[in-house]
Length: 323
Ligand code: CP
Image 1: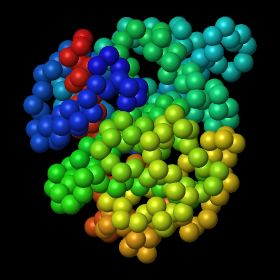
Image 2 (image 1 turned 90 degrees about the vertical axis):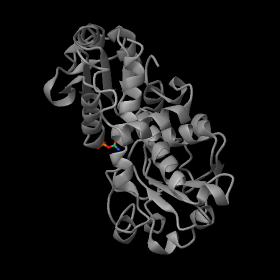
Image 3 (image 1 turned 180 degrees about the vertical axis):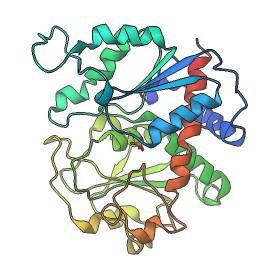
Image 4 (image 1 turned 120 degrees about the vertical axis):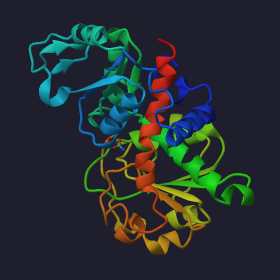
């Protein structure tokens, strides 16, 4: 693996998932694989899980991990080619990225979308410019449109659940429902786009997406999923329910809907096949998901977040083997 930006960088999803589960069973199996290698984690936006799980994963492989909060501690970066830098940006990515590439063997970057201009965000300008100029393998820690480490983790978690439950024996494919949920802020589509992209590419689920009218995601990610606008109908017999808010894609970055009836509650969970409930976190309690659901045995959000380490470890190890 030369980089990890989307599912398209992965030859065999199940092999990567099994590798993550292998590291979960034996975290220090490859403790010297990354000896004398350094990984840089660059954050243009906040993080708890991505930051710490990637550091732990790198450390398990014997790497030195250095975190740089670019948004708080670095110079304001310019990403536009040919920009006349007479505004607030101080350093062009063309100048900064090769220097970062000379300090590290692998670079990871988190760059959220602006949610102001869809064409700019969906062109993935920031991460593309970074890849173009840094000269070393890049791992996305969440970009303008995708969050691949989260999605790999999600499939690891679903696989783990399927291996220990009877769902696999009862049905040829588990039913997985991605449901929109209310939120107080306009959020990116990254997690939902990425989850849809990975579940579709995985091909081992009956995959349904439910959201209010006008909350369609880009078809480039959802193609292959069944879209049902009635949440109750969509939840019927679900084995896994993935809860996530996103802002509108068509009329970009807006909040059209905040109906609390879209929150996942115990009542709604009764429609499912005693589904496991997933969320990437952080979660707004009693807005996106009720306390009762989050604190119930159906919730696997802590297990899911814990699995971020093993997903990151499997990806870093794949890249280390190519250096
Ligand atoms: N799920 C996730 O990416 O969490 P953080 O934003 O805390 O890293």
